[in-house]
Amino acid sequence: MPELPEVETVKRGLAPAMTGSVITAVDQRRPDLRFPFPDNFAQRLTGAKVEAVERRAKFLLFPLDSQETMIAHLGMTGRFSIDTGRQTIEPGAFYAPDPPSGHDHLVLDVRAPSGLSQRITFSDPRRFGFIELFPTQGLEAGRLAALGPEPLSDAFSAEALVSRLKGKATPIKSALLDQKVVAGLGNIYVCEALLRAGISPKRLARSIGKVRAERLVAAIKDVLSEAIEAGGSTLRDYAAADGSEGGYQQRFYVYDREGEPCRLCGSPVKRMVQSGRSTFYCSACQR
Image 1: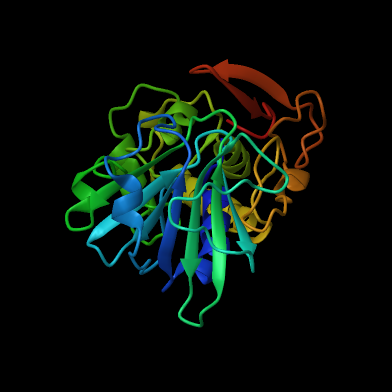
Image 2: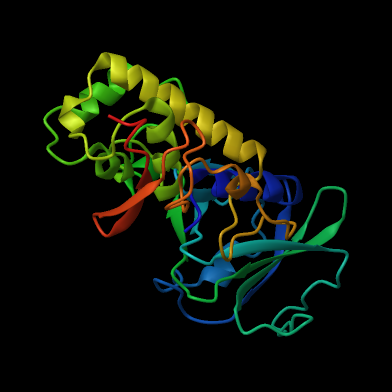
């Protein structure tokens, strides 16, 4: 499933094409993804101007001048792609992609202020992603209400992390995957950050004091920043909006490297299952 660096990479790829552009036509090809599309979805989007392309946790946000915001979640296999210079969709017409794909579920034609028309396609073979519309005013009180701080923001500090972990009897690995503790983290980058911070994934969250929290916050910020710079990680289906794959998987220290030498100390990387997810770690480096 795409995590924060992958979603941020997609956001940065879509922003030049969509920011300030008007949605001139919408081809909605099925009634639902993970959840049903909103009522009158195509009508509500057509003619609206996209004021920005933003990210909150693992969500993509598209504020519109209609005072609504389109929210997209990529799920496990969701992907946005951009096609420049194609003919726009005629109102009511069906656009057959070239080559044909049964997984292209939503097609948007957008026109930039320069007059350039581009096509934005959302594809999702497994349909675990979703796209919704919410009133922009009060958006944080809706689906985003329970999210913790953004890990790359100043709000995510050692003090804030210790406060959010206080009293939690779950392992620190599981706690960091809780989007209420910190927003946007996923399995890959938690494994990598815990190694760099020298913290065992088995350690109870409530035992993380200020010193360990400082190391952990710094490691999380470093790992995420490096992954964004590399365009995220491509393990199976993920690709950026221009179709390029991420490169951070080539830099993994422990993730998906069971039995291979830890890149910090050379000890064999171990694997265990926590909360139904594979955890990769080095027992020599992490305490």
